[in-house]
Length: 277
Image (cartoon, rainbow, N blue to C red):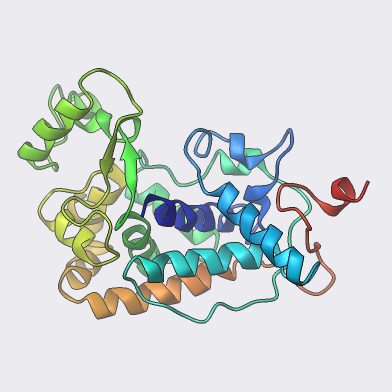
């Protein structure tokens, strides 16, 4: 199930940079793979490469890496117990990566106002922010490095984050005690591998793992923006699934390359000019 979460995350990270063009898959000096939010964190590249190789063996030059990533993300949701949807196809692959842009991806350490602004910059709204956060974090794991700041002296207070359940604080302190930021905890406590609405129930009970999750319910900014959505999704999984599907389709249509723009790569790691030498 961790790979399913990783493929959903790859979809998210690609859409936010240069639009949805599979730029996150490219190797090279400006590769987005080496941006801080992705390095030693983003996974699943070999899965997409394997799918691409199989597809090329059947119909070479017909299906883009961007479309393959979109389908893989959809199937990852479905096979984890979540909803399905028709993936719009016909995207083409980008010619360049954007490591600088990838370094500015939404961060688990950012406040709600900043996250809202970053989503708005690519045409996504508050509903998209909440539903996509839930979809990305209802399965999978996160390293201690991404949440250990909440366990003591949070924001210089000398105490743990007051919006984290005290028993969860104790449990996570034990997990991260040796200072190894690579130890991992489930993003959706008590519903680790199932794509469901339990993530939102955790937020209501102060059991969100990342600060960027918990602020959707507990921050001052959430009162008039995201809190009511969290409450609605926590008790209505059908509403969450419906909104998540709409948001995934919307995100997959951020500035796609179509027609004669871009290309259809033969190898997702490299543009055609490098693979046809």
